[in-house]
Image 1 (cartoon, one colour):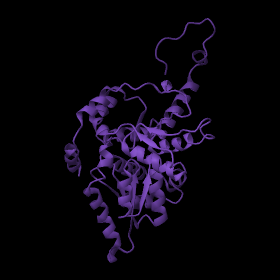
Image 2 (tube, helix red, strand yellow):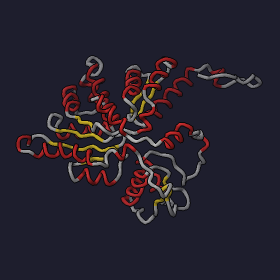
Image 3 (tube, one colour):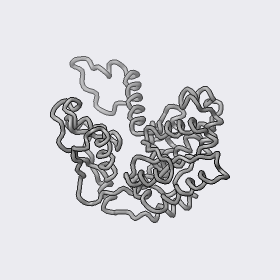
Image 4 (cartoon, one colour):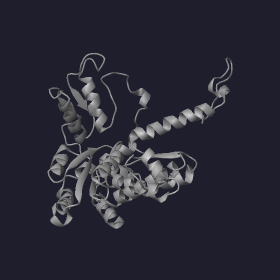
Amino acid sequence: QHQQQQQQQQQIPLDEELLEIYRQMDLPPTHAIPAHPLVAIADSLAMGDHAVRMCSPVLSGGAAASSIICLGVDFMSESVAAIMARNGCGHVPVYRAATRHIGCSLAESAEGRGYEAWLRKFGDASSSPSSSDKKALHVVYINTSLETKATSASILPTITCTSSNVLQTILQASAQMGPDRLQICYGPDTYMGENLKSLLDAVLSHDESWTDSRIRDELHPLHTRESLRHLRDNLHVYPHGNCIVHHMFGNSVVETVSDKYADAYVTAHLEVPGEMFQIALEKSMNDEGVVGSTSNILQFIERKVEEAAKDMPSSRQHPHNGSQPHIGSTP
């Protein structure tokens, strides 16, 4: 399977001009973004929520926006427009960043016949008389086109997820439908799907620390070790969906982190290659790292900074008047 994934990744056409832009990109620090109620930086889902607030003079804190400009790939503009229409703002136009197609290799991996055929395989199996007790559910990542979501829903019952709620989505669906009966098809992000499996494997491999009681308290109130094992075995991941940008940062980053930053906290998004995810997953077992969504990562960093600030001597936090400023790195 690993060889098949490597072959598929090699077949993805790389836009060298796009990759060079990413390599040389010098992004401004977040504090350089103007504090304006009609400017927001967010992921695909939150971007739509921000747009809805901008269209309301009450929620935006001033004049309502007469149009929305989405600086992102095409599926982001689609998601923003759909969320706005659902919330009574469909009359406000949404403009894309450019007239040309702004694609995403991950989203496009679900737009071909291969993804449709993969879904139909589970749809046909769940509808056959011999497997009447088995049901199939498609959990699709929000970073896909509206066409993909609509086509998928015509084949299998489909739920859209984000990186923030994907784990709770599959946990809830499995508990609600029966973990030994429900086949969950996750796609198209292969890295995220395999990382979810690794996360479940990590919990199941620590039987002394991850007891049934802890699983119910920290993961889901209706799950146990046995039900998680059924969920793990019935979780199917689309094998040919990858983002070329994420794929660039693989072994070289792992080697750098392992060789030069072994004592550092490590965070990993669910979309990163598996070898990067494993480092952060192992660190997370000792609260030295975190795996999850962007918000999970930001919360972890904020907490660690606050903990470090509390441990810092008061003389370094609040220098006496007249003292020389401390020059150098601050932990």
